[in-house]
Image (cartoon, rainbow, N blue to C red; front, top):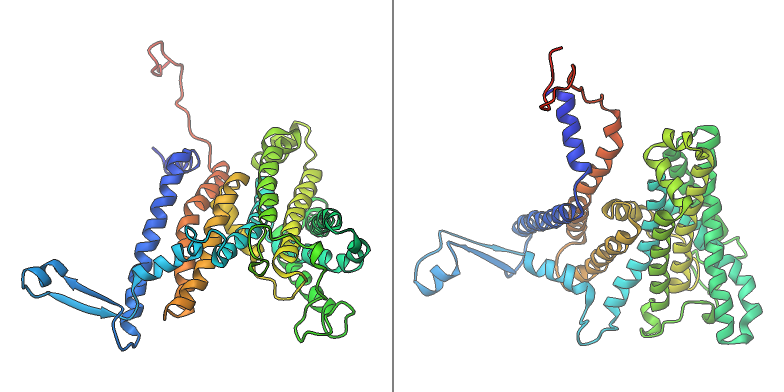
Length: 429
């Protein structure tokens, strides 16, 4: 077997892995990342200074030293307990969910999950079309800014309608976010389709443009800035124009309604991609653009449409961030758009899988706060553990995507020459 044949076989094995195999690989990667992270925590604990060891390791074991009277061959104390750290990182993100299902920490986890779901599915749509949308962060910022600024003028018109005002203004806010993000996403799509501009470069640069424009609009000289705040933020929106908290407390900045909108969006995008002609054209363009164009698909229009849809979904995520978590627009938006790239890769660009990947990220982000508050572990070490878990879990799926993309670049497999004999062999004739 030639080198190209071996390479092709390896790529095919990665690409054609079943769902169960991919799940097992991801679980194994998660376990491995936890083990390696535990070693890092112990190593950091040996280098730190503390009055009392938080974790003591005795070999051959506590049973030998305590019950048999033997002495440990190796006995060391560590300032950080890896078991306690991971307990806070994973379980701490849910709080006392059994005793209080609506506790604040659980609300924080679900709020992060909701916004990340929109960012992840936005990136997934573009990736399925074969377009690398690295600008979801900028599109999310534009969507959030468009929602906040426009509703400042529109929402007061419906202030006297009570619940009916919420029914009218809230969907309008989401629509404004989708419109702002969609137009901002269509711009790099049009540049790629009609000017052959690299979408990776254009979307990255447009992230900076969006952030800079947003900062300019809400600075001291802007009419949108809140005069009662020293921060760069807009005037607060009326409470009726925001997502109702329903089961959770208003101060928890989470709404079950927003989460339900997110779940319905994931299902809707999945249906669009797998059950409609537009989704078929989009997926075909991403897998085999030449074959899709030969079959009558307008490749340029598909690129623009996919980027516009991707930007619209990111923009809705920005609107949810404003209408659920903040109540206004503030500069320094967290990196939800960049996290959405990893969420999408981890989910294999599957809209339904994005929900589970977003939950994992939400747990890690919320749990990181618990670790920093509830332990002496430095925040830098918490960031290392979080990044390690994300890297290990996402990389197998990344390699599968890379294998699918680059498999077509390898030379075709050489077929045996000669006539096929009746017994399945190859004749010399």
